[in-house]
Image 1: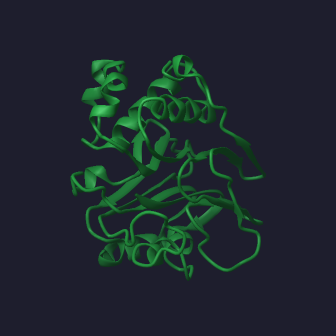
Image 2: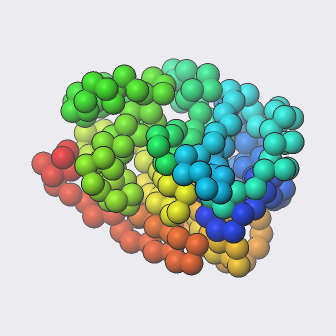
Length: 254
């Protein structure tokens, strides 16, 4: 479980997105207002962002609470980006506490985060894991459910699915064999795809761009809640929300 956020638009300092708002990710790490599972998010954090002219994002991840890392506060104050994905973590019991398990995960131009859990991990996903190429499994960043879900998403992206379809396919594939909560965030620095599947998700547009987050970071008007079992896709000038189609078990596993 966690709280996460993605932004795309005109460049903005990381601190303005994550630390300054009254109910931003910093505040959500100890006092989330909409979190349905867990009470604090103090098991690490991570931020990924894009620099102009470089399609490969930078990441800063730690196993400590975001409020305990004074170095990040300095980095966030002076670092601006047109696209950001960040998360504060509440580790599922039994999952490793080190920073390798902290979102965002990355590959090529992509950043990914999972807010939720897979029930009966890892046994429930043994068949789906076995469907992945060995190289994909060996490249897992951590031995946690979120890392395997990211590998499943990568496999669908590599097969030609766009970001939204890749997330839909994984939500359906995993839901067909396991219970759980599957709120995903995915960006390549030009667009955002997200799912609301078991936990809260909101979005807001402004003159600078669009924010997609587990919960509103302030009291400003314009925040809209994404219905459960929905896919959101966004660019700086456009947001679309549509239901996730429920596939048959036979097709969901593909």
